[in-house]
Amino acid sequence: MDFAALKALKPSEFTEAADGYKAASDMADHAYGDTEGQISARLRAGLNGVAVDAALSSLRDLAKNFHYVQVECGLAATSLKAFAAAMTDAKKKLDDALEDAAHQKLTVGADGSVTFPPGGEEKDGKVPEGGTVTGSAKGKPAGTVIDPTRDANSLSDALERQAANIHPNPNFGKAVAVANRIAQAVAEATEADTAWAPKLRKLKADDDLVVSDGDWADVQSDTAEVRAGAKDYLDHIKPPPKGDDPKANADWWKGLSPDEQSAYLSLNAAEVGALDGLPSVVRDEANRTVMAEKKAEFQIKLDGIPPQPTKYVASGKEYPKVQINPAWEEWDKKYAKDKEFLERNLKGMNAIQARFDATGQEGLPEAYLLGFDTKGGGRAIVANGNPETADHTAVFVPGTFTAIEKSHDYIGHMGELWKQTHAQVPGQNVSTITWIGYDAPQSIVPEAMTKGYAHDAAPDLNHFMAGLEQVQGGDGASHTTLIGHSYGSTVIGAASNAGDLRTDDILVAGSPGMLVGHAKDLDVEEGHVWSEAASFTKDQVPAGGKVAGLGGGTPFWKELLPFGSVWGQNVPSDEDFGAHIMDNDADSHTDYWRKDSLSLENQARVVAGRYDKVALD
Image 1 (cartoon, rainbow, N blue to C red):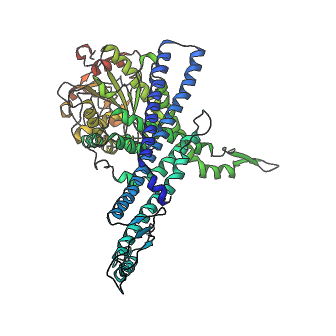
Image 2 (cartoon, rainbow, N blue to C red; image 1 turned 180 degrees about the vertical axis):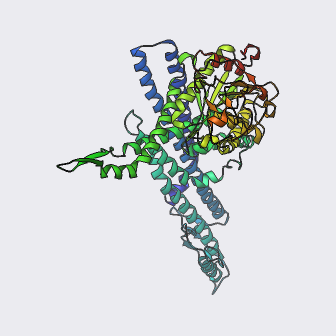
Image 3 (tube, helix red, strand yellow; image 1 turned 120 degrees about the horizontal axis):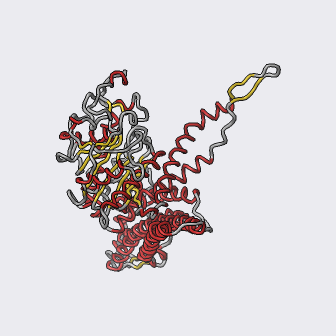
């Protein structure tokens, strides 16, 4: 970029273009939501057949297109805002230099050179002549080592000062200073233009109507490049507060302008999606983008793994014997763990997407992805219905063997609970949330016999519940029930011990113990702890010192558990624990959410606050 181009430049045009892309992103976002949450939902709710299935398939593809457009236009808007900010800064420096030149009676040429008039003391009857100078940019390249005894431009500055001091015309020094400012402004504008031009050119889609895994992989790459390029722009945006205070997170978000919110969300989706206390729609938008990118990334990696060779081969001629194929051993060593990791995460992501696609079926409301991550066993927090508007909210914490690849089962449990609860309170809003927010034990022995997993999970559960209360409008804004299955009930007990657990009721099913000896030790009012436990023959849950499901806590654990008691406390199904023992018809440890079951209906009555209708054992 040269002087003339910068002088004529109107940075506001880039800002206006950014606003246009932001508007396109917002429209695509609304279209995405309408396609998935409104049009498709109504089709599923009222029609069925081959034609409907075909229409829904086309609508799913259309929704993907809208989602992709939303994200890419958001990136384009942020890129243009960052570019406009850099150019605005450079243009202001140029305008200021030109204004000073005019005040000092200096003339700026079409090429940025500066002409100064005659001036100074007469010598030999003549006033020193004027002249023309061309400036030079003073900035040094990134990474230049600076001598701490000097400033970055000490040598050149010294030479210029010396030249100005010895020059007979005082206007010379003024002209040099202005010319250098002009050159610096042009250099900064050129640097910004050179940096952003290729980034903006990359923000384009393939010339087709299919959003492929490769397209979403490009989104990841584009985001990383834009984030790096927009560092100076983002530095002007206040970052989220340190710590895990949901109220501080909420205040931070509210304190950002709409443009700042949009920029931070488009470039830091994973961070925004994980912040408890932020609006559900914001977290949902962020986490859906993260999941779409991860799903594409993982599928591409999985597709790149070569086929698994035959494990066994025969060798020998007269007496062939079977041995392990060396090619299989090499494959197993190189690819097996990666393949397993990718497959189980993709299974979980497909289950979450299936829930999105099920909106409208049997009345299911829109789903919100309040958390997503592939670290550890995977994280997924999925809400049926918007928690912010819910009159009744349930949060479900699953137990041992919980992992993202089993999301289908856990999300299904809360889908059935939503239907039952919604039927209990017609006209009121209900939200049921699956909280896969911790690394759960992956074995009964020894992992589920330890407290460590529960204690590690407790702070995250407490933060989530506090964030939920924050977005709902404070204590009492929604009647909230925290539900724990199996080891999930232990997590709830640990969270209750660790801090202020924001819930009205605690309901557990098949609990092995809650790290407390009595219901009154849990962080809810008396009479608000509920327990379901099938008979021992149907649900053999090893408990903290007894066996859940045996009336009165029959102490058979010594014979059943040769390793002995781990917690040594009552369990919620014991009468002396003090919980309401609910009647149920569960046939196994995982059967408490069977459709139309008494177990499920009783849970719905608690979630709906219809305590007088709960059938007790």
